[in-house]
Each structure stands twice: as structure tokens, then as C-alpha cells.
Amino acid sequence: MNDQKIYDVAIIGAGPAGSFLAYQLSVHGLRVALFEKEKLPRIKTCAGGLSAKISDILPFDITPVIQKKIYGATVSHKFQHIFTKYTDKLLIFTVDRGDFDHYLVQYAEKKGAHLFDEERIKDLREDGDEYILTSDKQEIRCKIAIGADGAQSFLARKISLNPISRSHFGLQTEIPLDALRPFDFNTIRLDFGRLRDGYFWVFPKKETASVGVIGRLRDAVSLRPHLSDWLKLLGVDPDNVVLRGHSIPHRITHSPVSFDRIFLIGDAAGAADYWTGEGIYYALKTAQMLAGHIAAYFAGDQHALAGYERAMDRETLSDLRSSYYFSQAFNYLSAYAFKLIKNNDYPWDVFCRIMRGERTFSELQQRLKPHMLLNKIFNKKSRGR
Ligand SMILES: Cc1cc2nc3c(=O)[nH]c(=O)nc-3n(C[C@H](O)[C@H](O)[C@H](O)COP(=O)(O)OP(=O)(O)OC[C@H]3O[C@@H](n4cnc5c(N)ncnc54)[C@H](O)[C@@H]3O)c2cc1C
Image (cartoon, rainbow, N blue to C red):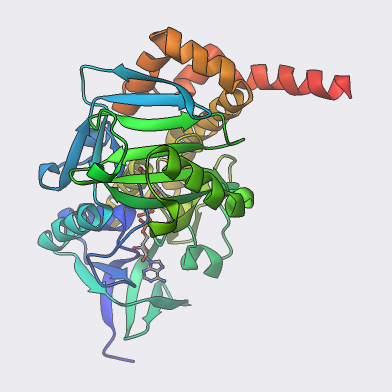
């Protein structure tokens, strides 16, 4: 076909990963095509919590799409022993994901990225030193192709990459604030200990709150009755809510996230925190890392692209793996850990610092060594058998 448009980079998926990459590459003057299968703005199943450290990454103001600023957490253990901790500095912003994601896309478009929404990419093939991407409406050519197409990435499957070592499942609903049994809506509400590997949440926004539960993907069917119990505790009739669920992918062991000039970012690369389920920060961070390497490549550094995978391992894998170890230790010792957090400010302070980007899970792992604690626990258990 000789009417195929030609781009430097084609990005599949206009979530935070894809749209932020499109923005940055357009700033560098590259020709960028951004494909999204849904009509934008689209609904996205998400609690909409952005940790405060997101401000370190985003080069523009997101005030217009902030729903609420959160300064604390109201926490319980197995639905009991509730307490609230506060912090002076901002902890989390909440957003409506439809609005937030669309806002990022609009920034990318302003810088020159070409958006094709309501266009699903269905195929990719190689042609010399270019790729041809086929959507349900057209074919385009590009030098570099990006899978920012989420946890069920089409592109990862197409090129046989599988960076996701574990998965959680999140189930949630949106409830008007005035229908919830009140707590301080300037805090998030969390409950631990009831699920083996997960937690319950309420993330307040301006007028509604995301109410949900995260658990292991293999336990997904049991999450619905758990969420019903959580909703009842919050004063909500579980039979009168619309539930939405989605998997949350985690890359906690090394596995390829690129092949030739094809790269995965965000959820497609398994870049979501194991303990908290936080994926938006990592979607933006992986986009930021890859943008630097692609810009250097087009500026003439032929070896620049190889650096992305190393940067992923250095800057995200170590943190995601450490978070996994902490979550396992926390879940195993949940009653004790809960008391520790309730009665001491140090763990709360550390959590706040991680949310603000002043500490990382991997730094903490070097100091507290939760993996050694886990080894001890599990060795003791196997000796006892
Ligand atoms: C219930 C739940 C609650 C969550 N809460 C939080 C939270 O509070 N904070 C947080 O940080 N993270 C949260 N997450 C995780 C977060 O939603 C993801 O990590 C984040 O959306 C990843 O961004 P992304 O850009 O990589 O992918 P996505 O946001 O999933 O975007 C991928 C996009 O690709 C599009 N697409 C897919 N295939 C194609 C195709 N073939 N062609 C064209 N387009 C395609 C999709 O339509 C989608 O718009 C939650 C997840 C769940 C399930």
C-alpha cells in the first residue's frame, strides 16, 4: 500500500504509559502515532490514587483533574480496631481515571502526537527496517513500536514476551460519598488481614469514592463476597452497585520487555507494585525512561535502545521485587504488623516517605531485609513438617 502514513514511533494504548510517552517523544520533535481502541475519554477500572511522587515525574500541572488531596489513612484489621494517622505533607491525589488519562492525551496532542481513538491495533509485521501496524481502519508504518496496551497486552502476546510473573485482581465500585458511613474523607480507608494477599480500600474523590478490594488473581472469584462484606460494613447495599474488575500485573523477576525495536511499558511490562497495586506511577516512570532512550536513538546513538531494559531492571524491578517481599512479610505477620503500625509512628512515616518518593522499597529492603525474615519463616515451617 503506498498511502500508508509513516511515523517514527507508534504507540498502542492511550493510558498513562502510552500518552505520557507520546507527549515526551513529541516534545523531542518525533512523529508519533497514538492508538486507542476506546473512544476517549473512556472509563477505566481504577481507584484513581496517585502517590505524591508523581509530581516528580510529570512536567506539567495536573491541578485541573485532581479530585481530592489526601493527608492520612484510616486503617483497620479484619474490619476491627480502626485508627487514623495523619501527615502534614501531601500523601496521595485522587483522580477520575477517565478525566486524568484524557488530560494526558490532550497534552500529547498539543505537542503534535497524532491520536487515533476507537482504533484497535490487530496486527504487527516487519518490513525491512520498519514495522507495519494494522488497525481495524488503516495500516501505518513506523520505526519503533510500543506496547502500552495494558495488562492483557496484544503486542506482548504477538511477539511472545511474558514479563508478568504474578497477577492480582482488583474489583471495585463507585459510591456517592453521602451514601457511605462517614469517616474523615480527607484520608483513604484501608483494611488488612482478612485476605491472604490483598486489602480493602476506599479512595474518596470530590463527590464519590472508589470502594474496592485487591486479591490474588487465582482467588478472583472469592473477591465478590468479600467486597459485599466490605460494602455492608461501610453502610452500602452490595446488591445495588455496579462492579468492575481487572487484573493488575507484576514483573518481579527478570524477563524481557523488548524485542528488536519493540518495547513494552506500564502494565504491559508488568510495572505495578505488588503490595499496593499502584501502577500509574510506574506507567509514567517506564514511559519516562523509554522516552530518553528513544530520543537518544533518533539523535544518532545506535546503541541507546538497548539501555531501556537495563534501566527497567535497575530502576523498577528492584523496587517491585522489594515491595513483593515486604507484602509477603506483612501479610504473614499481619496482626503483629498492624499493631506495630497502630502503636508506632515510624512505619507510618516510612510509608508516607515512600508515597512521596523520599524512600524506596529497595532502600528499605537493604536495611530491614524482609526476604531474610521470610526465608527464616518458611525454612522453619518446612523443618516443622
Ligand atoms: C481495580 C483497580 C484499581 C486500581 N487502582 C489504582 C490506583 O489507585 N492507583 C494506581 O496507581 N494504580 C491503580 N491500578 C492500576 C492501574 O490502573 C494500572 O497500573 C494503570 O492503568 C496502567 O497504565 P497503562 O497505561 O500501562 O495501561 P492502561 O491504563 O490499562 O491503558 C492501556 C490502554 O490500551 C488500550 N488498548 C489495549 N489494547 C489495545 C489495542 N489492541 N489497540 C489499541 N488500544 C488498546 C486500552 O483500551 C487502554 O486504554 C488499579 C487497577 C485496578 C484493576
